[in-house]
Image 1 (spheres, helix red, strand yellow):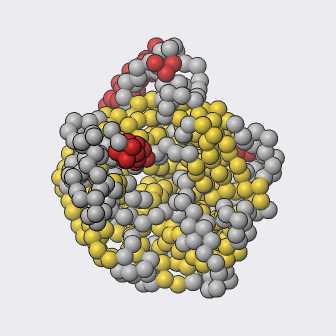
Image 2 (image 1 turned 30 degrees about the horizontal axis):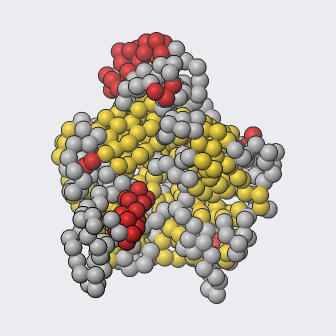
Image 3 (image 1 turned 120 degrees about the horizontal axis):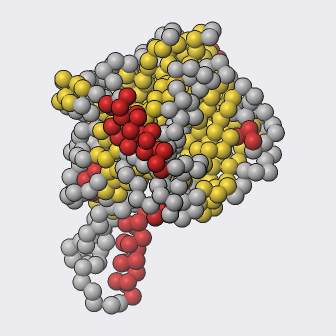
Length: 527
């Protein structure tokens, strides 16, 4: 075998690993002088997701939903998509007690039939754990319910035709206590680097970073905190061990003695990979999950602000060496404006967290915040998030919206209900045509498809289509068909004892397809 062929095989093997286990097949022989082929778009063959432990409240009820969109071809046959309790629980529990508790939950609620998942045996990572949720086919979601504070973190993977676009939603309702509210999050993929602007170490907040390790070897993570004056001093944020297949919650206020209302959290790993997300709880406004911001970029869109928001705060951080001077705009129903609260550019110093209170900026119409370089300003990458409040007085509820990228090919959010769901679509530049598919229900119903046109510079808020004969919950899949980029978000709202509980999930592209460059040399013949 010649040296060139060996190099090409090594390159193709490395590429397949980096692109999420994309299917790679040998190309047909071509003339060495021919023009290189365009990269092929192929479905991923494996996806991983992590869901942190949802709550410490005995009053919590968590609904988990797993879903893969229908319609992706070329990913093979068979496959599986399973979420199971992490196999290395942080608390010492007796498996027999857990099994008894699961049986009691089943007797109380037929919907808790999946709660029979047992804690692992004493041999740790080698123990077999029964899946909590097992998805059988694309296009139809499955769901399960867990009550109380003992709901574990879940880890899982999807393979074959269930891998492209696989998503899972975790929605928790807490009716009383400091963490009361509707807490929702899309379960995350593992990684090595995460940014969370919008966290806090203030005395009125309790923010935990949940680190979940899906692998069979331990990971080591670092947590750095940045306030308005720069790095917050911390002696305990480095070298945090995350055991194999386990989840570790870290209270931010224990990492530093400095109380800051607006903090940016940076999670990185020295070894291994983790899923990371922040659980934020406030004394007067309940709590919700704060997902990681999109990768740092000079421009960002934060979609999904409810029309009845009573308070909106923008938090921005510049992770590079340059300062940022940003223009802040609101893309609403009729167009894009500069709110009076953002009349002056927002200055963000390198390595420092900046914030801007926008008040009730939406004025009754759902919208999205857009940020980008001010006139004459440099193209400085930033990360950003919004803290959003609905309600007044003692009847308030908080949610968080991170900056999110556009939907390139497809994005999905699960656990939509017949009532209370709102889909927002923002086209920051050119007008766009978008196809929205409402899947079959978890308990029955037929798929429905609807097309929307979003004018450039505006946000369209709509009650999404509902499957015909819906039983249970369903998934929404967004696919741009033409025009400019589109950013999407879904809000889920429930009123409980006069409190307007809500949660907002952004819809970044699902990355179910990857580009695999063609080669000029026939790799199927070894010389």
